[in-house]
Length: 331
Image (cartoon, rainbow, N blue to C red):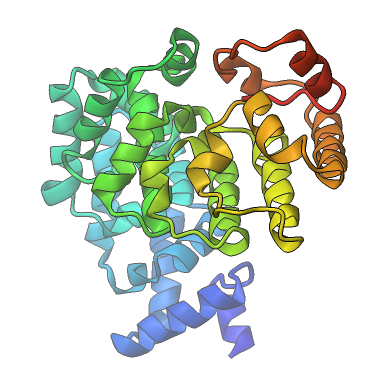
């Protein structure tokens, strides 16, 4: 069996990819000879061995497709201005395009882009930059652009969101909506979170997921609480979330808290307010707070978070001196 896979170009396919492809071939009664003919078809279209493996891993259904269906995708791409030399890159980044109908999905999507004001050259350039835009549902980009155009946020944030153009920004919105929905939010609530906390559009998805995982696994909250406190995803993890969480966790462990501290009370107070409420009365908490702040400052001496620093609250000279000795957190 192993030799047969090498013969049909499976040398670089992951074990999971081999298993899923075998399951698919068994389900649709596709014989081993199909892999050889498929390999020849894709190679004839300029697809590299690496991309062939990617396609089998991400879209094993390709083994049940006819040659005309596959070549039809290449003709579609060439028809919208994608050079044949770039087809390999499109297939490699977004193998799922092979499973989309040209007439029922891809052409209407291109037409939608034009109706939204993006001409053929803009759509072509965006597809070359990020082929996954072809996986958007019909009407999806329109809804993402509507959200962008109604945002109420600082100009510095809006400039960063739109610096690559509206099309790119719309797709970034889509990716973050997908991220929120993967973690359990319904689409409507994901839109609410993103509209109220637009900083997420310029944050890396990995950073967003890290915060959500911490919220669910460490803090034991439900994902739906993000609808009420979307700011949780907008603040800095090391500089705000982790120090405050560790202070509350310690205080709770030693019986130092009366009423439960909800997520809103954990995130929304300014640094000074949080310090006066939960840190200042307890010497051990001061050590925890200062230690976390020092670590965060060493790891992240500056960066994007400074652009989002909230308006400062009035503070007395004594308060300022107290807090300065322990930390300098971004909002």
